[in-house]
Image (cartoon, rainbow, N blue to C red; front, side):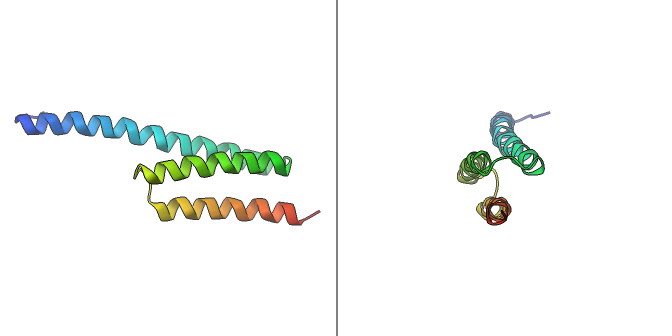
Amino acid sequence: MANTKSSKKAVRSSKRKRTHNLFWEKAVKTNVKTLKASLEHKKDVKELTTELVALQKALDKAAKEKVIHKNKANRVKSRYAKRIAALQATP
């Protein structure tokens, strides 16, 4: 349990930061799950691109808020963009 005034403030601050980070982590995770499910069910490429845009938006915002590293965001965006591009290339 926090004893000093500054440690009590640190507890409050870390609680706020935790809820903020969990919000963005959940947003990214749900977008990844929906895109993965759509890829497995081989949906239309238009639907996949709209879901990819939503994922990219969530990743960029999470990276901007420093919830995840910007390189991780770029890596995830690149991987899913490659998978969708491969589907587009095959007839």
